[in-house]
Length: 159
Image (tube, one colour):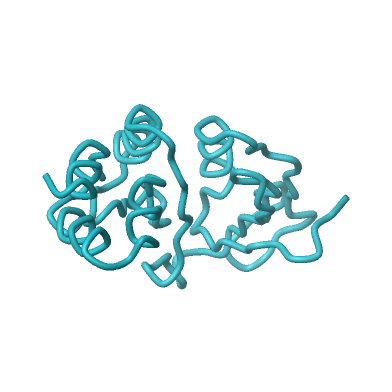
């Protein structure tokens, strides 16, 4: 069944590579279809990949190879909730270690320029608690690139 709402992500020319990476990295993710150009077109040739249908953690996406005119920005990101430090490390290291880049407060960027927030539930739960717990967790997070579960947990306890 085709989703009624699909996220369309613009890539220069590597939508298929990106989709395959996401499918190999995240659970409930897969590449479903690749559409190729039926004829030559401005900026491409017959057989070039035009679009790729895929999911990331169950979210329907289309990767569009549209050229370099519209790069990704921090205005859009995938936020991936994690339940353990191992899970946080695995996703973070996969993205950053595959040509990506670290940013602040749990954000990183993959090699295609797409932004990701690798966000431990311990952090979102602390923020939802409000008050001094949220303040301590937020202040601890502000010093981090990849989020450290133990440090957030200590901040929640006031240690």
